[in-house]
Length: 350
Ligand code: NAD
Image 1 (tube, protein in one colour):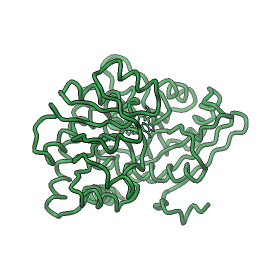
Image 2 (tube, helix red, strand yellow):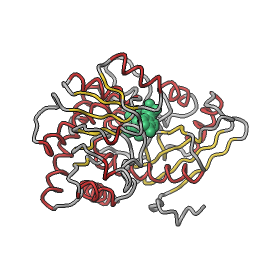
Image 3 (cartoon, rainbow, N blue to C red):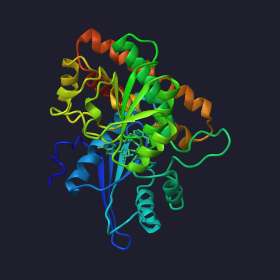
Image 4 (cartoon, rainbow, N blue to C red):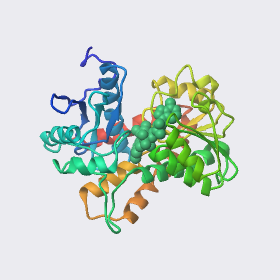
């Protein structure tokens, strides 16, 4: 398996392969860039088909974090950790301790937080070994805690901007939104969408997550294999990445794609494929920055929920600027977002 010639290698500053025999931890920490600050990005706990898949994920996710943090104007570079979940090495306190020590050994070049498969409690455990962690429980009006409600709020506000730009509607009332994945972010998003009067179609491969939302809200459940292709106005991918591909794009009926999942496009060219079908794609790392905005306020301290909210509310304006430029230049939104991010990173280089 190549690393420096890997298709997703993008001049990453460093890659750290962690193997802790006693806890069974196998993890990769990818530091893409520290140009704008410590490389911040969550830790994903996931069962990968192969080690190569885990490496690809770490490389792509960490680059995405650099772009996300730059566009959100945060004092963070980009990084990501992936823990290779394994039945033989479950997520024990010992495994989390070994992970935390690995994060600590990087001396603050990487700051971790929750991502898929990791919880606030897990981060609390990680905090026992390292200060380079965020997404911890907070008290009172202090900023921080579980980032997923903030991610959901940013996606919700961004979706409104995308619906206005593509469908000319000022509200989500009466629109149908298909939500793929109702985990931490997807479930919060469903609540906001329901309050706004949207009809919900949901799918999840996890029965208990699906049932929890089904019990709480009026929803129609769709099979996971069907959710991308429903007659919804908006598709909100909130599960995993790599779902917008040459195989899936031709069947998508929604005119707006606005969701939380990282790396929704399989390749850059898939952005052009969506645009050719007149589907407005809200670039993932622009719309899903709410969580890292909260993480940043918490990590640097002295902030409040109101300040987090004010920063999350800037997400729709950034999207509007990208949509307007894409319209004018007849170019895909993902390309314009990448250019925007690269300009900000270049401007931040000393
Ligand atoms: P989560 O693990 O809580 O939820 C993901 C859900 O998707 C789970 O319920 C899972 O069963 C489901 N899922 C997985 N594969 C599926 C499939 N093929 N079809 C339908 N459902 C499927 O994770 P989360 O924290 O809600 O994050 C969701 C996505 O948003 C991830 O891609 C994550 O990287 C991204 N994201 C999360 C945050 C955050 O604040 N948590 C921030 C930015 C981006």
